[in-house]
Image (cartoon, rainbow, N blue to C red; front, side, top):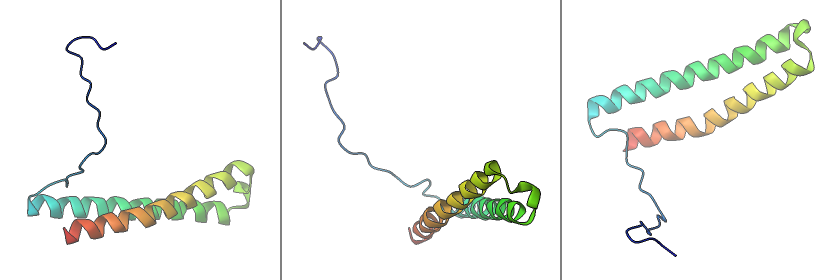
Length: 90
């Protein structure tokens, strides 16, 4: 029982448009995303190295933190380079 004037449409797909059409903005976004990717990778690597080299950090909490940093590195290393390549190629 739909009330009169109710919206009964359903969305089955969506179109994801690019972030920007301006070449200057595209260059800025590429540099921004590349910088964030490099900082994320370096930060996760430093976390893993700090936990691996300091014996006081060989506890279960830091073991799981190192695993989380590793998984984050794997995720960003598979998605961000592809996004950057798609951004450059148009």
